[in-house]
Length: 93
Image (cartoon, rainbow, N blue to C red; front, side, top):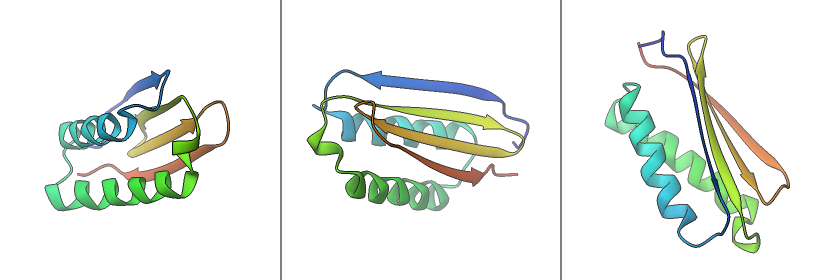
């Protein structure tokens, strides 16, 4: 499935429910591009850890951006116009 090529982004104007929506959305994207359940769970755990370290709960808005190209899935999480956190993962074969 390495030939996936897409961009998907979601911006939320308020923190209420961001973490649950982020987790559901991320799980759907990872499943859609073909990650095995264990690999998807590992990626989601890493992203949740990143969110916890980011202090997102102190901000009112944020977003998530998925970009698949050149055999990589890049996930960018932003918080209230502040810092962005980037993670990249090889797309499954």
